[in-house]
Length: 310
Image (cartoon, rainbow, N blue to C red; front, side):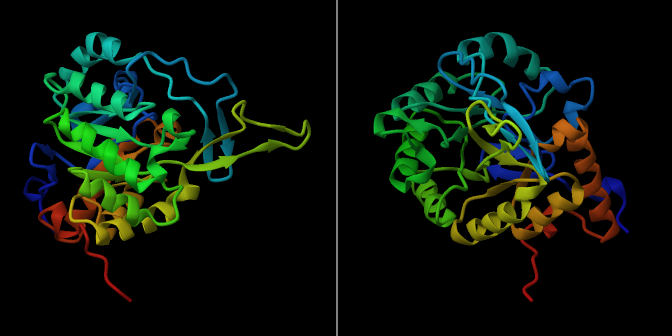
């Protein structure tokens, strides 16, 4: 058994992004980070990924916006956020005090919006990296989501990279035929890392009223129900690209997180679990550390990509 002080938990996501441990929060499930200060020691986390930020404030969709499902939840929040200017003046200054890397998730309706956002964040102190949400409708191309078209994935990635020197993480949509195609497009566009998966598209119906349970009719499915799909896509992506991969999808505890690391993910993001137990992220860090000690590992790198073929 390895002593606690001998275990190395740090992971490298990009040249300018080294995390103290592989546990990150997932955008949209942890607010701006500040909402969880009463429940989680933010110093203990690898990184805080804030909810998606757009150029202008967004009010989001009308309620109902969240519905529980078997093994998960559906959400159709509509990317509600305070906008980039308010985030920089009101949220980021407080986040800086915790000394934990802050990753800003960005979203837009056009390539130009992504590029402009990246430029606005480029020289801002306290931002460690940007994560690009490409599951937004591209209003200039008939409502097609950027993340489902490899050419658009490549274009958005390249545009963001041209406007920022901070590491760029592209968050992939699972709603595609072959995840490796969009992963390679992001890598070719210059992405420093890839995170996946975003939510699957789903819906729920109230059988008594015969109406959709979400005002938006459809929403994003997350939680334990999607973990097997997410794990498979992460495993496929790790084998398809040379850049680091961050695993997301249904991680509720340390055992779930370890599966993603063993499949090859360099880090993980905790999402829906934050709504169930607000301190899940911190517990996952402790669980990974305990596992490494139990199995005599000196660093988390020893288990990343250690999957044994049958």
